Amino acid sequence: MSKWRVKPVSAFEADMKKSELKRVLGKWSLTAIGIGAIIGGGIFVLTGTGAFNHAGPALALSFVIAGIACIFAALCYSEFSSILPVEGSAYAYAYGTIGEVFAWIIGWGLILEYAMGSMTVAVSWSGYFNKMLHMFGITLPDYLTTDPSSYTGEGFSMNLPAFLIVLFVIGILTRGTSGAAKANNFIVILKVSAVIFVIVAGLFFINAENWTPFIPDAKTIMVDNKPHEAYGIGGVISGAAAIFFAYVGFDAVSTQAGEAINPKKDIPFAIIVSLLACTALYIMVSLVLTGMMNYQDFDPKGAYPEAIKAPVAYAFDIAGQAWAGYIITIAATVGLISVLMVMIMGQSRIFLGMSKDGLIPPVFSKIHPISGTPKRNLIILGTFISIVAAFTPISKLADMTSFGTLFAFTMVCIAVWILRVKQPQLERTFKVPALPVIAICGIAINTYLMINLSIDAQLLSLSWLVVGILVYFSYGKRNSKLGKTPFNPNE
Image 1 (spheres, rainbow, N blue to C red):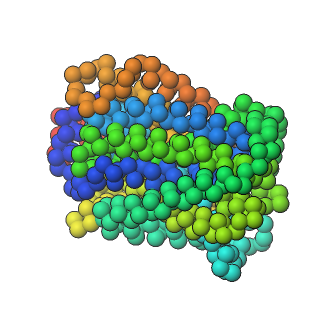
Image 2: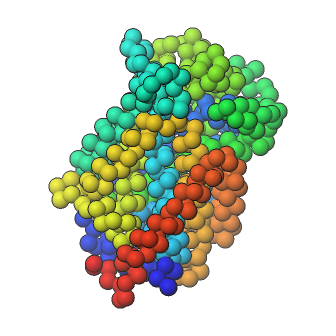
Image 3: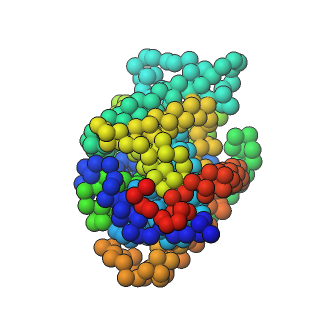
């Protein structure tokens, strides 16, 4: 049956030869794309929600666990990208190993991952943007900065800044990948400098009592008006699952393989370097932040309600260092733009790969002759993302992003093992050491973290996958180029 067929490596090679994408990304630009996506919402926003809703001061351990889970998946991604340097990320890897139906499920999960991730970052950016405006004496009305479910007033409301920033980013991306990469490089330098500033400056304002107890006793708290089990070892684990979406950046590196100058060598390098560097920064920032500010002060209903949206800046405000808050707020406001840029760019390339294979409509595979980008693809995605970001609360978005990320990572660990067994003769410029051990560890820890996400996130995400299966059988299976006999990669 066509849905079980595997796309041959020769077909991927044919796709690469006739690709209209421009190969303009070098090793360090790819690394900057990874850092650009990883350093963002995780540090500037999710540190607050992760500490209060899940782990307390032990949030640093949550980042360690999430980082370990990512390392196993990153090694598997690196081997795959050295074999199949094409856009599509885990979707393409599964298509070349497990089969079409599994590739579709992974691709559909990646759509969830990147769409929800983009929306989460847009909402996060709005929080920092509003704080920056407050610093200069400008205040937007609540009904223009709050989604309807979080709005306490009467009448219409929307998060207008989140809506507009997505449209702004789409404008940059449609002009060309080279220009977008240069903008991303500049922003990455700015925000990494800001993160290092937070770590160094924050050391002088740490109160060690805020780390006691480092792992608070497990208890039930209210989150979004629902009882939620937090803290203890279980809270550390659930915290790792909840903040996992912060690590999606290295997956975004693999989606840019079609525009890399030397993808077989540079993609693995960029994936591993960006992941290791950012994991170290996450751990240090979470330790500094929970040392400066008691984790209970991140309560959105407490004395500092806005701390949950801009926790790093508020930690310095509380320490009496408002000047530092200015630096951090401006850097975060600018820095989150690159996260959003990479997220949307990554999703558009996944759509591009799926569309070229006939699994989604051909409009998503059209490349603009001048910019060399999937312009229509980006405009459609941007419209959808901007509307949802304007009307949805951040807590729902982040957890669903983590589910899509964990699901994709698990499937990549399975797929790289299958390909090593089925086609050991393929040239691999990077090979995972002790692959069975690494793959099993990656599968186990990513699945375990998926199970520890909130029930709401699991149900919503599984519902998304069910819808995806229905779409596949109603459209993808009938229009798949691989399902045609004989398969012609030049179609």
